[in-house]
Amino acid sequence: MLSSLWIPFTLIAAAGQVARNAMQRSLTARLGTWGATNIRFLFGFPFSLVFLTVVLLATGDHLSWPPALFWPWLLLGALSQIIATGLMLLAMTDRSFVVTTAYLKTEAIQTAIFGFIFLGDPLSVPKVIAILIATVGVVITALRPGGEKSFAELKPTVTGLVAAAAFALSAVGFRGAIITVEGVSFVTAASTTLVWGLFVQTAILTVYLLARAPDVLRGILSLWRPSMLAGFVGAFASQFWFLAFALTAAANVRTLALVEVLFAQGVSYYSFKQPVSLREICGIGLIVAGVALLIAV
View 1 (cartoon, rainbow, N blue to C red):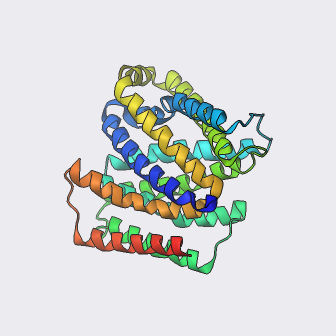
View 2: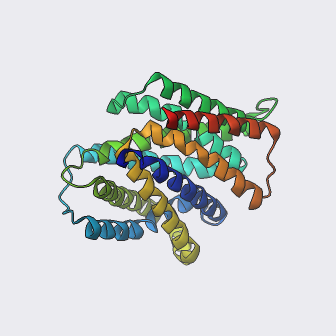
View 3: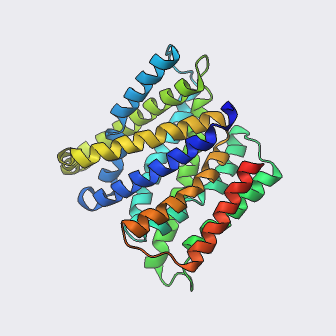
C-alpha cells in the first residue's frame, strides 16, 4: 500500500503545479521573469514550515542536522529548479501555455537518464517503453505542423527543452537529498528537504533581486495577495512532489506527471481560450497510454 502512494501524490502535485504555473504566468508581465520566479519560493517557504510542523506533530519524529551528503544534492535540486522555473516562464511569454507545458514534459526521459546515472535508479525495459511512448505523445502535442520558421519561433522551443533538462536535474537532486535523510519517516524526510530547498532558493533570488532589481522586490511585496496564493499552491504541489520522490524513482514520478499536459489543456481552454487541435488530442492519447503502461508495470 505504502509503495503505491506515489501515484496519488504525483497526481495531486501535477494538478497543483498547473495551477501555480498559471498564477505565475499572470504575474510575469508585472514582475518580470525572475520576480515571478521568486514568488513560488519567497511566499512558499513559510507554508513549507507550516507543513513540516504539522508532519512533526503527526509523526512524532525529531529533527536532526542533515548529513553532509544531503547538501550537494539539495544545491543541485535548488539551483536547477531556479534556472528551470525562470526559463519556463520566459518560454510561456513566447508560446501558448499548453505547448510550453508539453515541451517541459520532455523532462521525463531526461530524468530517467539522470536518475540512472547519478542515483542508480533501476529502469526496466517496459518502463523505458512507457516513458518513450509518453514522450512521443508530448512531442506530437507540442510541435506545430511545418516546423519552426525562424529563430523567433525556435527560441521558445529551445528554452522549453533546456528548462525541461533543468527540471530533470532538479528532480534527481531533490530525490538524492531526500533519501540521505535517515532515522525519520519518509514524510518527514520529504518535508525537511522541502523546507531547506525553499530556504536556499528564497535566499539566492532575494539577494539577487536586492542587488540587481530592488524595484522588482518591492513590486512582489506590493502584490502580496495574489503572490501569497501562488506561494501556497506552489508549496502544496512541491510537498506532494517530494513525498512521491521519497517513495519511488524520480523517472516514475516525472513520467506519471505527464498527465499535467491534460490539466494544462483544461486551463488553456477555459482560462486562456486557446483551442485544442486534433493533433494535440492524438498526442494526449499517447501520453495517457504511456502513463497507463508505467503504472501497470
